[in-house]
Length: 178
Length: 127
Image (cartoon, rainbow over all chains, first blue to last red; front, side, top):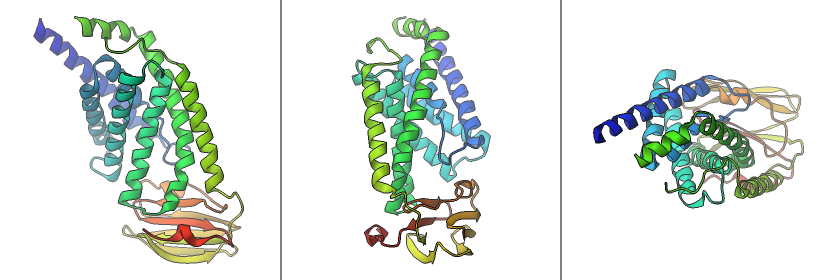
């Protein structure tokens, strides 16, 4: 019984990681209208894993997603890879934290906005520390704030739709209480 | 289990969006003077690589770690027309013409910024 449940979890997480990898790869390839701008659709998967399983699982799925996704696109271990990895992990940590303490006040939209904000801040900080030590780089901050709102709202709505439509909530409940 | 019921939208989200919106407006106001600039400053590897007038028509080749990035000035605007970086984000950034706006090529470590004529130069100090 116990082994069975573990198998189920592994398969489920692997599937979610696969979906996240594809979303990630597609977004890497699609040239977005505004430079730096990514919707972060794969973040919806992170949020689902956080809700269904928890922080360690979510971090693992993020790491897998960036690894497999970068492998698909051909950016493995290039600067972009480290940006995506640190951004994804930061986003998962923040969203998990808010989910644990602030789910009473924040909905999925707010949580994913905070996640997008964490991702953008970490990446901007990384660019600043590693490459362009110019205070002018920080003048991109308002743009990043605005993009976080837009991307976070869309991802939040997507996550909510996925949870409702796919019956994942019920599935997660069964998994947790089984 | 541990979480309260998960909803798509709660009151905190509205407050968050409001605060972030105000923050965006504030920082935008702070950063961009929204005036056409007068000078173009090129920064390579954290160091000043020359200041040019925004009035003329020139192409400047800057040699970064990856190779040659071409910065163009013309019609009161600045843009990067070619760069050796894989993603070409700086090229896709297009033309900028206002004080405070920047073009950044992270892989080639080049930063191009527009300055006003009477710009206080405190921001130009390298770290």
